[in-house]
Image (tube, rainbow, N blue to C red; front, side, top):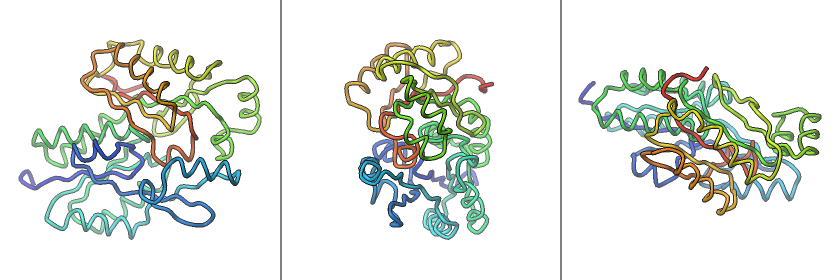
Length: 287
């Protein structure tokens, strides 16, 4: 097994983007997006801006759908046809049945290892890149999966949402909470803990200024942060806003690498435009 080639793949929720996928040799298994009963492949046949246009035109949100067990089996067979082992990453099992479907499919295909990222977006992407590092170090699939499962609780994933309409329409918060927050111009900071999303804090004010406060607070405990890499992931924010946050993040810590990525259809469908997060790994599990 130590001599077996190991491949990496993930569902499309990790938001790594084509450049990082090419650099780290990661293959994406896309989820699907449903608009007016038509099914589109995430990132291939539908882009986040299509979802925003659909919502503005119809008043309805696009829905995301997990990959079927059969499609997972086909994907796994293709990836392992040359005798390789495959480590496949999925969005948190608490957020989607995609992980469950992948596990069932892996029972039908040898040498496939499923990792529940317990996260979404580049929170999961951080784990995929960590696995790529471990492959380069010569670790076995079993060693990598065990190490990643220990690393997952250390991922600090959060994001600030400017417009609560998507969360409200998608059933992510009550009508009263959404109405009150919109009236007060509150911007919730949503965090991922134990595989699930929750509101940790609500900011008040202009989105750009709120983001600066958010970054200061997320990066305040500098000694607890692993500085190897950090993601700034956003859902269609203005370039000026993204660039300002990137400069703030770079100035805050001696990062090895700072990646700026755009969220794909899954995150965009649930959170809407003008959502931004700073995601990284802590040195210890997050309480």
